[in-house]
Image (cartoon, rainbow, N blue to C red; front, side, top):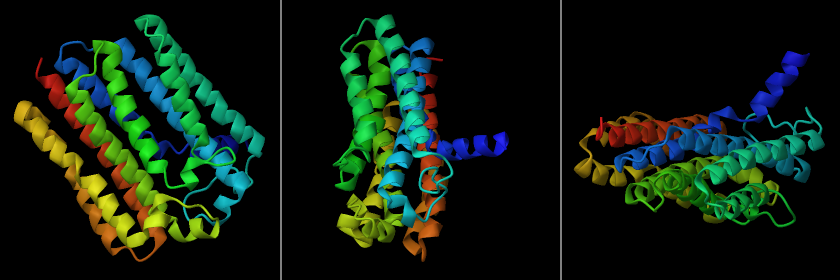
Length: 294
């Protein structure tokens, strides 16, 4: 019984989304090393913040969508609250527990670096995480989810990882943050394309619902392919980053499926492919930046 319950909580944490938390930190670490300022301790703390925040967001979304009834129509994997497998209050508590762990890791960074203004950034990230689907007027129900993901799981996470190590906004981190943010936004976009019909039933106005499937798919493709334009620029200065183009082995099939899918369930694989493409891209880009000083 306990193992079954633990399995439910692990599934509710949506571990398949964790590559989106790892990717920006990996790029940020590589950017820090490109100016010979890499710090393992600070990188691991930044990674902790990102992972805890991602899991917290997942539980928060599970709770908020579940109590609103949005998940009553969902096509995708099991939701703890929506399936009534776990009490809503327990899921909400889990969300804030992970937000607390993210805050604790962030506080450790502040104490090490002396950058106390980062507390405000961390607070903003947690507020954004909760109000994506939480509160009376969640911005995720108003087509702003992709923008928030781009900012916090792209720019803030990547540039922030580098900044706490080098003390300034580093150009490689900015470019890498844009790429990471585009991948993260692409994952959310294809998730919302999958749920267009069910979200309409639940009155959830995501960007995909507002644009319609045709234009939402076009925007998804723009998001998932644009990072390779950025990568091409990196290869001019850091030839080893060419490894990043291997992630096209995941992007290409994701593109084919999203263009030919006949059912919403087929897009679940695109979610996985895009998420892991983001990680593969980030690890290769980071490795390419590290190799410069090996």
